[in-house]
Image (cartoon, rainbow, N blue to C red; front, top):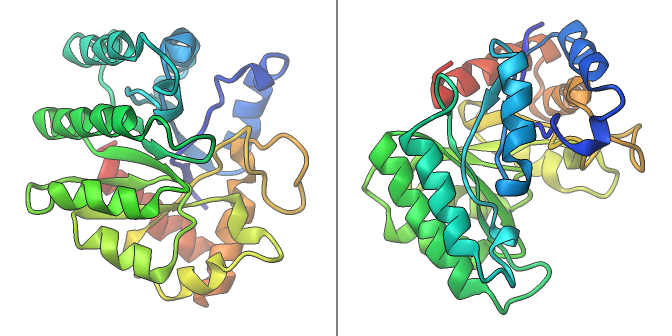
Length: 261
């Protein structure tokens, strides 16, 4: 069973003591690719270092996270740095513009700045023909509005850590060629995601962990890691009436199509 974790912060400090072991555990679990998102300049070096050590397994993205815009007078400089990386990659290639998007969980005060940064990075995705990896938290109407502005222009990518409704899924699909990252929350007892997943086209689903965040059951309250994507796979299989092997094969093919690895 070959799996792809389409969203892994394996470079995070949470893995400082056992990063190589965590990568090996992922390989042992059948995870053949991990897509690593950029956040901002504070994490670029760590992300690129891990990708440099494991170029066949850990694939880098580049972008500016929406919460790195909040209350940050230097966010334009951060965005310019991401653009410089894209123009002159220090690695063989970047596989996506990400992680980008809108996050109003902590505050609504920076929606205008987040939107400006996000729209510029959508333009970059079109310029470089790269998929977007989009973070959305407490901002579904705003997200749909922004993506709607670009409908018909060929936007594409992954809606990371999807937690929306079937209505949200359908609205996003009308704007572009998007797939939806399903992670640990699909395993949570009170989650409605299994019902949503059951009504989605399997061709529009990829798997992720978002490690070290959002661990699946039975690891809630502990550090998440890429090997745990197997638990997500099993829950998606249960929700869709397929086998885990089928889900692994289909979602890895979906990820390969989106990211081009």
